[in-house]
Structures are given as structure tokens and as C-alpha cells.
Image (cartoon, rainbow, N blue to C red):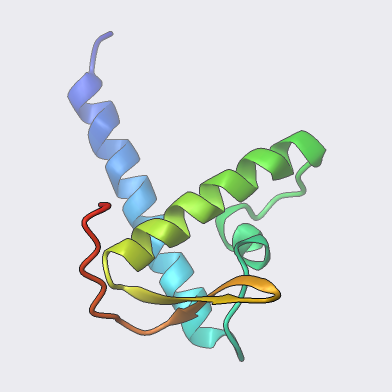
Length: 95
């Protein structure tokens, strides 16, 4: 594979931008939101069922990354997991 360093840099920049977009969306949200509600932030096109399945996994991964790094809050409720803007002092060892 040629150009691996460039491709890795592109992927890193892409995901860093998506993380910022998720943080901004949570700042604008009226209340804590689910990973499912964040899919349109990451994917601006119409998704079929299979694509939506993979998009959900990516949304969860991005949100958990933000949470584990103390950039957003995560609340577990009887309705499921909700994410909200706001830094935390999350010192999780699962980075």
C-alpha cells in the first residue's frame, strides 16, 4: 500500500472533524440525546437499513470516545443511554 501515512492523516482529520461536529450538535440539543439521534450529524445522506446499522455503530463509537476522553457527559437511564454536552472528569482507564 502506497501513501499510507497520508491516508492515516486523512482518516485522523476526518474523525477529528466528526467528533467536533458531534460536540457542537450536543451543545445545540435541548436535552441529552441518543446515539441514534446523532446519526444525521455524521451522515447527511439517506441511509438504507444496512447502512443505518453500521452508522449506529460508528455513532456509538464516536460518542463513547468523546465521553471516555471527558469531552461530553453520558447518562444511563431506564430509556437507554443519553449523551450531553459538557466536559467531565472521566478518568476511565478504558481509552
